[in-house]
Length: 109
Image (tube, rainbow, N blue to C red; front, side, top):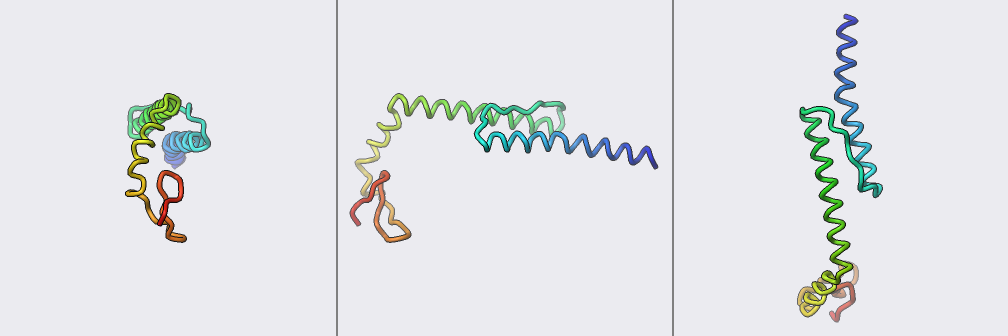
């Protein structure tokens, strides 16, 4: 009986620790700490989840850097200018007062 209790406690801790570590890492990323990595301790489903989290975080960092570089180089501004010529066509009415908005400014309704 005592052995069963000890084994169940060990098994529960083996599952909950990695889940708690992933939850903590997810909170850190949500708070803006983009360099958060999780230690992969196994090759089971929890280990695969931890490895996937690390890959996802690395890709988010890469995408964030690429977007920042694009803004710096002016690519985003050029894309915005290209769509600006069709801004009136794509303007959507505000659900509040019906005015149309395009490219961040009020358009004639």
